[in-house]
Amino acid sequence: MEGFVKFNDVRDVTMQELRDLNIYDLIIDARSPREYEEDHIPGAVNMPVVNNEEYAEVGTLHRTNTTAAYQIGVQYSLVNMARHLREDIVPKFPDKARILVYCFRGGKRSKLWTDNLETIGYRVHKLKGGWKGYRRFVNEQLATLPTKYRYNVLTGPTGCGKTRLLYALREAGEQVLDLEEIAAHRGSVLGALPDGTPQPSQKYFDSLLLKEMDALDPARPVWVEAESKKIGNVQVPDALLETMRKGTTYQVDAEMAQRVLLWREDYRHFEEDPPGMIERLVFLRPLVGGEEFKAWEDLAAEKRMPELFERLMRKHYDPAYRRSVLRNYPEIDKSPVIYLDDLSPAGLLKVAKSLKTGE
Image (cartoon, helix red, strand yellow):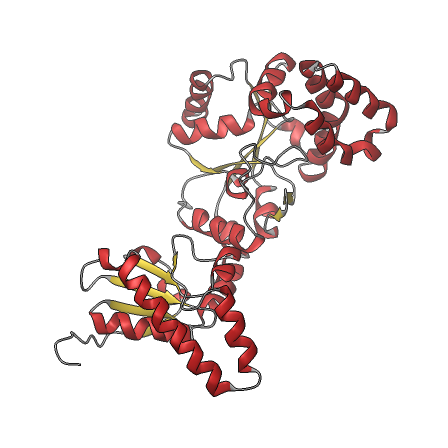
C-alpha cells in the first residue's frame, strides 16, 4: 500500500534474546481475556484478537471446518483490532514506537497484530513461542535466578512486626523481596486481604516474582521474611526457599501487648466481625481441639477481641511457628535478635537504618 512506511526489522524474538522488556513502549497480549487473566507478561495490555466467546466458537468450528473457522476468525479479528486501534492506547504512541506482540504460541493472532502495526509504521517484534515460550522461560529462570542472591531472612512469631520492618528496610534503601505483597496474602488462614483483593494465579505469581527478582542487584543482600512453601493458594519456588534457608537469619520479637496492638490494626475487619473470624478459624479446630476452639468462640461472642488475639497467638500461632522455623532453620536460636519495642513507622525506620549500617 503506497503512502505507508514499511519497516524491515520485524522479526521473531525469544525471551532469552530479550531479557529486558523495558525496551518496548507497549506490549500487546493478543490472547482472549480469560487467557490473559490467568497469566501474562507483567505490564502487557490485553488487546484480544477475539474475545472469550469468539475464541470458543472459532475453536469448536475448527474441529469440523478449518476454512470456515479461519474465515469467521479473521472477520472477528478485523472488527476487534479496528476497535482497539480506534479506542485503546495504540493511537497514543508515536510512529516508530517499539511494540512487542504475543499470543498463545506466537502464531496467527500475533501475526494479525504484527502485520497491521507494521503497516501503520510501528517497529514491531513478535514473541517467538508466544506465551508458551514465555512461561517456559519463567520456569527456567525461577529454578536458577534465586540462587544468585544472598538473603537476610527475618524470622519471628506472628504479629511481631516482620512485614512492617521489611517496609522500613525498603524505605531505608535496602533491597527487599516482599513475598506476601506479591502473593496478595498474609500467609495464614486469616491472611486474605481485607479489601477483597484476590490472589494471583500460580502462573501470574511466578511472573510477578520473576519481574521483582530480575530487578535485584546480586551484589547486595536481599531482605526477605521467612515463609512456608505456600502463601495462601500460591507456592514459593523451591530454589528460592532452599537458598533463603542458607541465608543470614534474624529473630524478630516484640512484647505481647505490641503484638496484640498490631493485630488490632492489621485485622480490624475481624475485630468488627468476630463471627467472620471464627468462620475462618474453624479449619484449625482439629489442630487445637474442641475445648480450645470453644474458648475462642466464647471470646468472639463476647467481643473480647484483644484477649482472643492474644490467646490465638499463645495457644496456636506461636507454637506452630516455632515448630516450623526449627524445621526450616535448625540453627535459628544462634541468630541475632531484633527486639522491636516501637512498631511505629518512625521506630521501625530507626531499626532499619541501624541494620543497614550494621550498628
